[in-house]
Image 1 (tube, one colour):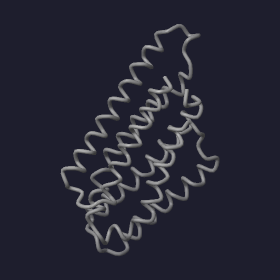
Image 2: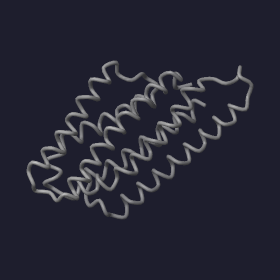
Image 3: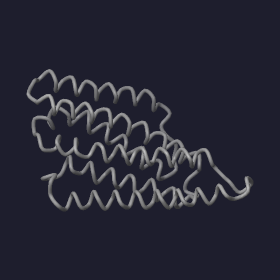
Amino acid sequence: MGPLVQKVIGSTRRYFETICARLISAPSGSAGSDLDGRLARKNTHIAFANLGNAFKRMMLEPKAQQKYVAELNDLLIQSHALAAHIAAVAPALTQTADSAALQRLTRSSLARALDTVRENLKQAEAGSGAPGNWLQSYKALARALDEMVVNVEKTGMETAEITSELKLLAYQCKQMLSCSYLICKDASAIRLPV
């Protein structure tokens, strides 16, 4: 199961990095970045399906052969949820990347949150535990994301639709932070690499 778990975490991290690269790269609507995102999403779903099938086969084995059932189940759930949040955040990241003013107002808070998700996934892939002060870090990042939205609202430079998209982006970032922490926690409990 260890290699399959690492493939799920690794492919999810690559999918996340591909989507986040749109925030930093040139025109987000380019065919290359869209194709890369779709390919990364496909690879994530394939890795998830492979782990899901292996988990299902393991559950048919005698109880003595079943290992890390709760952790693997939670890792499957959190990986699926994280992939869904990544897909949901892609359009908002594209819109943020297309607006220079919005990028200036959001870059710091957004970059810190996205870097933390990426770092959690890297630690999970390596099998190391989540940081002990994760809850304080999460609260600080969540507060910064909320302040980011408030600051954009205060400027009045953006339309209500863009502000609403930014609120959704902040919410999705908080969810990704939570999922990435739980994935890291489960991966360390499974003691990767196996």
